Length: 80
Image 1 (tube, helix red, strand yellow):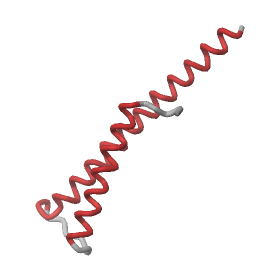
Image 2 (cartoon, one colour; image 1 turned 180 degrees about the vertical axis):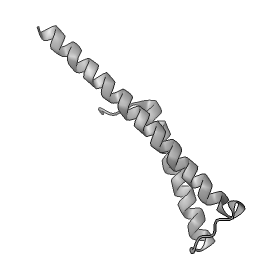
Image 3 (cartoon, one colour; image 1 turned 135 degrees about the vertical axis):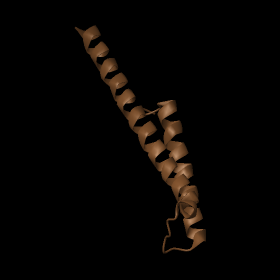
Image 4 (cartoon, one colour; image 1 turned 90 degrees about the vertical axis):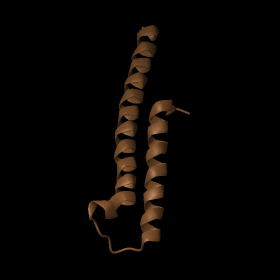
């Protein structure tokens, strides 16, 4: 009885890690691509009403955070 409860908890934890890592990969890719879009927006003909410095800073933050989310999905270190 006790062994099946531990196995059930391990299975639930494994499923949670899998769902969470898939979400981190997906959101990381979306945010990373958003950063690339903000960097290359003038080449696509998109004009923003903000200064280029702020656009570059926001793009850099998006790239860093997107990379962090992808890395966190790779590490799957959610219970520490």
